[in-house]
Image 1 (cartoon, one colour):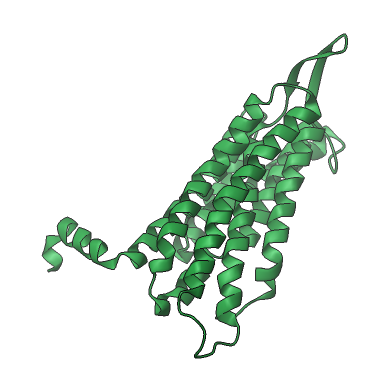
Image 2 (cartoon, one colour):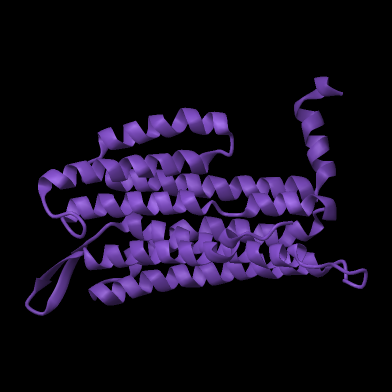
Amino acid sequence: MRLRISDLTGALLLGACSLVLLLQAVFTAYISTYSTWVVGVRTSLPQLGAAGALVMLAAFAVAHLAPTTWLAGTTTASTPEPTTGSLIRRGYLTTAVGGTITAALYGLATGTAVEYDYTPYLTWTLGAALPLAACAALIAATAPRIPADALPTWLAMTRPAITHAITATAGIYLMRAALTLTTPISTNTIAAIAGSIGAALLGIATALTISRSRTIRAITAPGLAIGYALVFTVDTTGALIVGYLTALTWWAIRLTAHTLRLAFPQPGTALRRLTNPSSD
């Protein structure tokens, strides 16, 4: 098991991505006031959801780091066998709880910053984070049962793709900046181009997150990039971000399903025999 520099910096980069999206959504919010009262706030709720999902992904990176560090170190005959399983269990339980709390704090912080009702912000930050939290909790319960010889391969699969998340963050940031004419966008002419570039980046990140197959990625990435760029408008931005959030949730579900197959191989074999009797 090889510990890479990206394993050490991945959680920090993902956390930074989530903070960038959160702060942009807050600072570009359009606040309507009557006298001294805030009567309405317009900001990108799906972008807040993306911030919540990325902070949960950062927690996944931290959970991946602990057992990876253990397996990458020097092992001895006196090392107790259950240690790795214990690290996995504690790490992913911490992911489920800590990521959910942080996502909730994101929603509360947004409501405090704009001085408005917390409900819509909590709904989006928690709504995007909770499916990932549920997957982390299920992984924590089942991953310690994975055979020792399968752990290195499994840990390699649990490593969040930092490049995909950074690409998605750049795309969402550019789209929001284009719609609000904020840094680094200054004119409407530049905004149209930058917004389309941001949408294309988000489409690429979505395609790369959906599947691990190089063939599928090679087919879907250009198509989604072009499609996202063509349909980018103020009305479609939220739907494009929701598409990425769906892909991120699918990544977590796929990882959980693979964990269950490794932890309980016999039920998996029985299920395959039931669904495909001709293979016997």
